[in-house]
Length: 129
Image 1 (cartoon, one colour):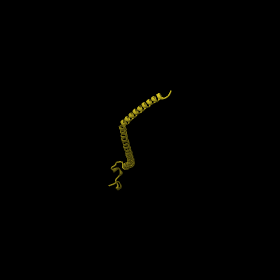
Image 2 (cartoon, rainbow, N blue to C red):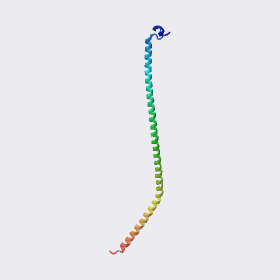
Image 3 (cartoon, rainbow, N blue to C red):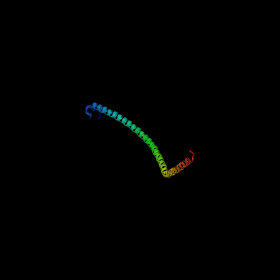
Image 4 (tube, rainbow, N blue to C red):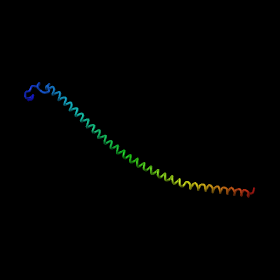
């Protein structure tokens, strides 16, 4: 038998009758509002997480592009260093030959100088005073 069928309100199992039911309903409504609020917060956080994931992917893509650019530049610089080392090695191989040539030319210049000085002395002695 229910209250509608004639049970007195005081015999209701919640004890306070309608007042307790109203409190329970109000409490349930409060919990539903809280649940909706929390659900909205969860959705907002999911959206924020999604945005952060997209931003992270964008940063990863950009970093990958920059990394590839830097690796390319490093390879280019390594090639330039190799070319400079090869040029330096060639210069070091040519240096002794150039040094010998310079010494030979200096010796030849010295010999011509002596010849000129000797010729000037000889011509100076022959010239009338």
